Length: 174
Image (tube, rainbow, N blue to C red; front, side, top):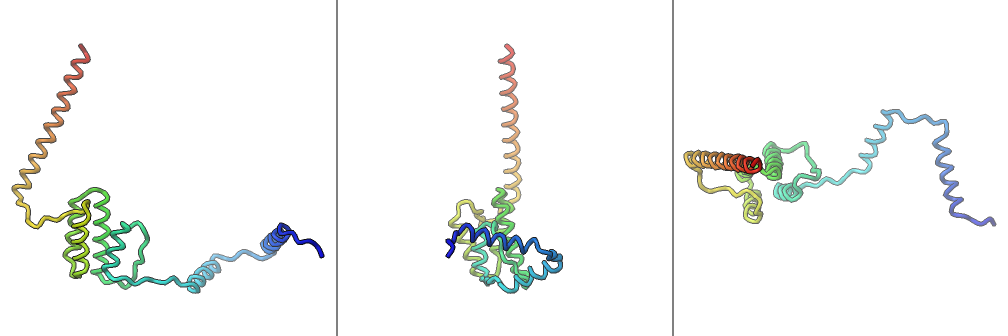
């Protein structure tokens, strides 16, 4: 009886694989490859998850829309709009544009589903970075005055900085 060497067995296996590759068989055409690909997809179907709107909202907000989500073809327009609003809220929140994020949060709050409303109010209470919506309307005159004051303050700081640069330049020249 000949001693069996595991390295010889591996070598024989590799040779048989390479031998089949080097045979006169022609490579598959693109149509055949596509057929086998689609056939394999139907042989091992992935389990699709059916989530409620509240669970989808939780998943999308917690994940931050970084992972892939299963978009189903038969969605209602309201559900698609909710997905869009959630995506835009997360996007503008990450970008730091609180005003635009608050508009999408308002749209989400106006949803008809009570579970979504509760979840959003819970997010606003618990998350310090989330946009808090004011319960009262802002007077346009107050907003205009605030913008003018901010503009004047920015102009004053720019003027102060330029004045400081002029003083530094004059001191350095002496």
